[in-house]
Amino acid sequence: MTKNLNTTLSTLLNTFELINNTLKNHAEPVLSGYTITEMHCIECIGKIENPNVTKISQSLNMTRGGISKMLKKLIGKGTVITYTRDENKKEVYYTLTDLGQAVFHAHEKIHQEWNSKDMEFFKQFEEKEIKFALNFIQKYSEHLKKAIADLKKE
Image (cartoon, rainbow, N blue to C red; front, side, top):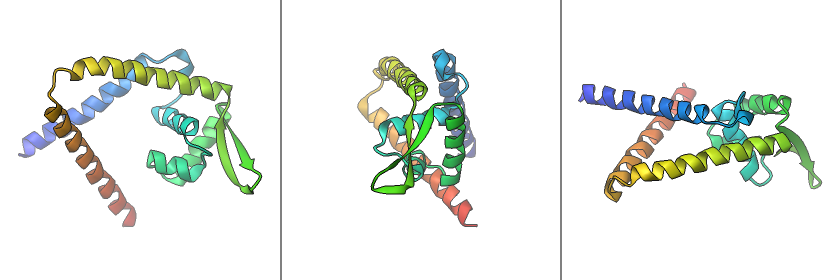
C-alpha cells in the first residue's frame, strides 16, 4: 500500500508540474513575467464583482496577507489598479488595466485551447472512470486543505 501511495502522490505531483510547464510553454508573450498564481489573481479580478482582498483570498484559498503582497506586485506591473465606491470610501477594490485585460484574455485563451485538447484525451474514458478520478482528487484536495488548516492552528 505504501509503495502504491508514494507512486500515486509522485504521479500527481509530476502531472501538476507537466500541466504547469505545458501552459507556460504555450503562453502568449503577454503572459511572460507572471506566475500562475498572479494569472489566477488577475482572473479573479476579471470575473468577481467588486473584487477586494477578502473575495480574492477566498477564491484563491490564500491568506489576505499573501493576496495583498501579490496585488502590490500586480499594481507595480501595471495590470491592476484600485478604486473605491461612493457608499464606502474605506473599502478598496481592484480592477484590471488594459494590460491586465490583455493578460486576462490571454490566460482565458490558453484554458480554452487546452480544454479543447483535453476533451479529445478524456473521450477514451467512461463517465464512471472520470467521476472516480475527480472524486479522488477532490477528496485528496480536501485532505490537504484540512492538513494546512491544522498546521495553522499549531
